[in-house]
Image 1 (tube, rainbow, N blue to C red):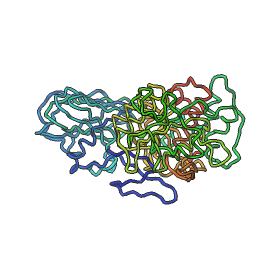
Image 2 (image 1 turned 45 degrees about the vertical axis):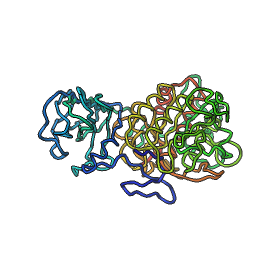
Image 3 (image 1 turned 120 degrees about the vertical axis):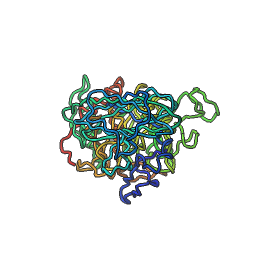
Image 4 (image 1 turned 90 degrees about the vertical axis):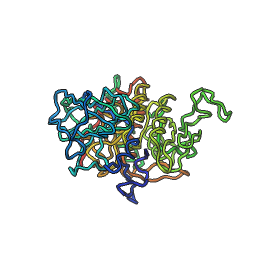
Length: 500
């Protein structure tokens, strides 16, 4: 399965193109239809978990005569109290669909248990009601190996959905269980822009022992820095010092004059001796790692990662651009090549960042749901790193993966323009509450390979602004946990002046 930076153009089934003036490419979730089911089964051997729960408890039975398509899906009715369904998946009945309804915004949990063979699970929303599973309509999946139980937990709006149980190998009875719990919408949360515009000044002022800092503005027309309150933090002595931000992306041009003094250095490694001095499994990883080419030179051949890095921590050196946290250190991790990247590499890059001391991990990328990546994001949070994720660029009503993990770990970021208008390409926060803020993401000037600069647009450009704000907060209080950082970003964001 391919994973990509949101602003990286690659062949898409939807045949979407990039705007020549502002790259806002779309990364799809999954192209899936009934003719491709056999081929896509392996593709979907990844899990998607969120905070909400619908569960279905399995019990051994014979094959069910109906439920082979969305049209004749087995009806579960309105899900509220726990339900248990018995079913069979195997050679005689390779798949079954179940239809259910939610009467309100709910936390949903679906589980598949009592397995003796390999059966997988999907959650589907037939958004266009054409009775075909189209691109992007698989909204959750679980594909554990062998006879391990499957589960999907997510938050969903009121509406009609489908559960898809399908054979991967072997024959088995199963128990499908469902449970839905109504969700309350927090005060101040909006389905378009979440909690609002992230602001470093307001967040720092809310920390213990801090007072409301004065209003400060830059004099270099850096409107994006002003909107996120970076100059206010700087004026109070917080510039990202002592904070490491991992850029898990297309790599970083480590020779760029506006970045080369702000690179993380692995002090436990001796450069060029061909030995894994720190025994972390990576030889001579002095400036990060390239998981695409499997070497210690995570150079950017695309430009996307370098642009992201500049927004976070370009130096304040009198030329070029200045990053939100201009004294933070960038840990370059290359997981996406010219043809995209794999779930395995993205997950490995996240784990590398967490294991090597990253305080913040920037994920300006997206793709189909992956249990490997979800597990890596969870691991990073447990290791003390805040994961900041792009919401996506298809103008959808909710973030795509991995941004939709923000109801469990990390925070998702949407994009606004200079007038505080939500960008038309930006995926919205969604009616189901999750940690979501907005930041500047339209025509953002930042570093580009070969000592150049470019303006790009996308939620990939908004995300590093929030990573930078998080670095400013950590330079003000290094004891903040990922959960505390997320809460600060949410509760001090403002919706003043935001429009859709």
